[in-house]
Image 1 (tube, rainbow, N blue to C red):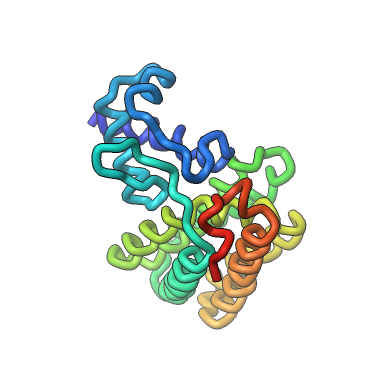
Image 2: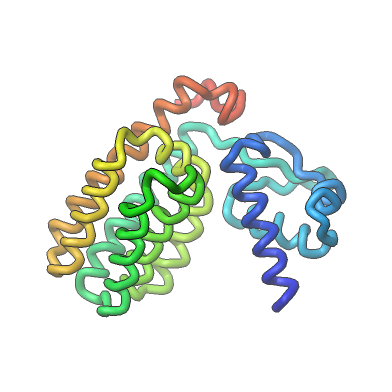
Length: 227
């Protein structure tokens, strides 16, 4: 258990480096060197890389160092379409199945983001935002749905972070989250789904804009001809 916890901690550190761009798309992750830099052994480092590979953030290569994934716009678009459908299903089910404890946690995360939006750094703010979405998925009480959603969310972790950085204002994000919570509280599936759809609509547009303006420096050269 301690080894697994250590691997998850290393995976989180690597994940944040990927989001920061310290490990850009296409960059190799040399197991021995990276373990030495972090002051950890190679066993949990190997498991951490496997965790990130399962999330789609890292690509494993036979007899070569793994590299940070560099998806094309078409690949990201396809995954966003699936993720959006999963989240809309989740909010619909959560309107029927969420417990008061589930709603309390969703409210807590909504307040945490709204109260600290301007003081949190980009990654901390993004992680609270994703925790909000994950809490809604858990409130659907469908393990198959939760597992599939987590897989796609992992694959879109960097794309969604890049989208979050482009969002226009605190007010729009906070108001969208509050509208989603209001729909859940009243068990109004149509309203909750409409609010979430409005929230998700910017995701693909933001990602597409990012590919168009910063493909070479942030996403990787192989994506420049996509779509």
